[in-house]
Length: 142
Length: 89
Image (cartoon, rainbow over all chains, first blue to last red; front, side, top):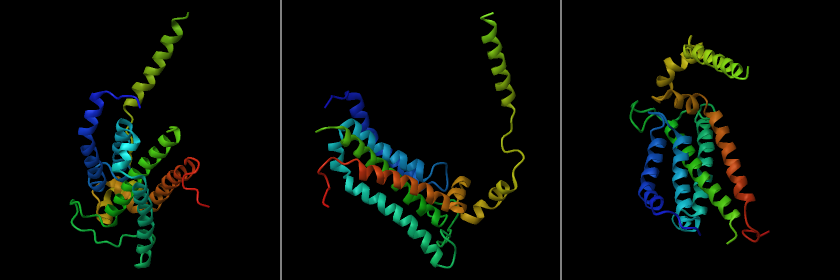
């Protein structure tokens, strides 16, 4: 493997937890401020991709196993659909809001929207990381 | 002659840019947009109106988007495997 410059390596190592934190912040505050599931999920996934580019996919896979990421992706999709059917069985329409709205302006509010944001966010983040793993390992011959 | 044409093009481009400065987007407000602006927070509980639309009023549309992304990721996951890996059947 080619050596990567020290500046990039050290900065990535310092920046990585903050990128994960920022992704989680965007996902969990999607109903209060600009951002949301897709954007926060992409930042979450790009943190993992950055680590994979700098330290190599093999070293990254020790921390974020591909099967675990894939499992999170599948569970996210499943929870989204099941939440829709739950709203339908509780007397509403598909994806109707069955959770109380709570106090407007705080993080645990907006009923189902917060949980849909969480599922979409983690699905997008882990899905992008899985796609990156597969593409890199398919291209390399080792 | 060769210098006149670029200058003319630049003038036309500048005219379009300066005439686009004063466009007021979203004026007047559509009826449906006005409904979302007035009732969005009360209906869905989300302060961010964009979120209240794409996960509140139109969550079904977002489910479709998520399905497209999920199918793309699943396709890469299933197709891009090296020979001998995970082939059981």
